[in-house]
Length: 203
Image (cartoon, rainbow, N blue to C red; front, side, top):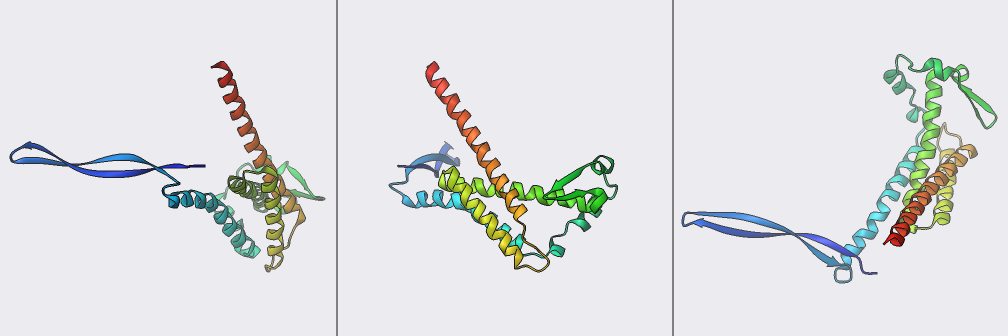
């Protein structure tokens, strides 16, 4: 497949107003470039697909290598939320998490907020991982399997870190995040294709 790119070319020029005055100017134009003629630009396009994936992997590896004390959000939450907003509403929530009841009454306000943030981060982070892999592979099942594998490796890495314990429950959260993200991509692509086919039939 021949991919086309555009180079921004700056062309200098002059315009004579009169004998004593001349304007100098630059003209910018887009020049189409074929990836067959300049394969370097095709390589740049391919490399861009891996950037998000690599950055996410680095962030995950760095995060799972930190101790709980280094990762704790409690000091920041106490500074950001000194008035404990929505304490009354949140106090009525009780979350059953794999046989354990997680609530403000059981853990305290700031620990409960931290729990919500951490578990939401699992879903969002591995959803982004799945999307970044899909950008590279364009395969739903392959992207899902690789993401689940990364989630399992991440939990194993945590087991090597002091003060951290691996959790199969977190792998399930990561798996749900990957499935949700890929399902959203599927729906978007499906409706886009359906819309294009409908417009094609109308024409």
